[in-house]
Amino acid sequence: MSYNFSITLVLFSLIAVIAGALVPFQAGSNAFLGKELGHPLWATVVSLIISLSVVVPILIALKVPAMKLDTVASLPWWAWFGGVAGVIYITAALVLTPKLGATTFIVCVITGQVIISLFIDNFGLMGLPAKEMNLGRIMGVLFIILGMALVQYFTVEKTTPSARVENNTQEISIAEINK
Image 1 (cartoon, rainbow, N blue to C red):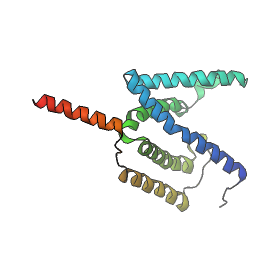
Image 2: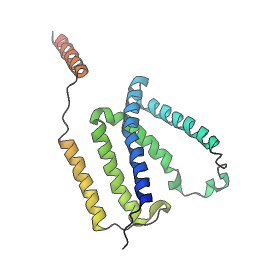
Image 3: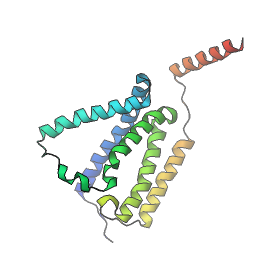
Image 4: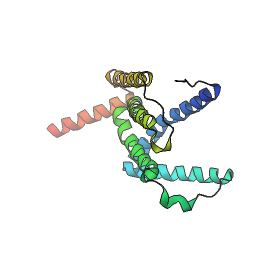
């Protein structure tokens, strides 16, 4: 068994951490957008349109070669699942982030990602190189699950001035109904 540790790996890991740091902002902004647009699915549509309008100019600027359309018919079914997963994730994020909070939502997302990634790696699914599911990796995932449980257990709703105003309004509304 050989262990993989290099400066390149550290750099790539740092880039992945930075990309991951953007995810709570995506969840929060999409949640706000869903509320303001009247339905979570509209926020999903807008988010995907914005993604498309960002990536197309990048493709053009980098002079990326045209897509290989002749291979489309021969691709496996799961090759298209990324788009479906994106819609599910974006919609879940904008619906669940206001209910769970950014930290709990993201910790749950990471837990799900790591558990499934362990199996994808072990079996070399989706054309990825196989990586052994060994005791160290399993223990790492168990620590992440423990971390998720701790985050959920110790999450206490913080009362903000706007939350107090909303709570007072709700109490008045209930009192008015009881009159």
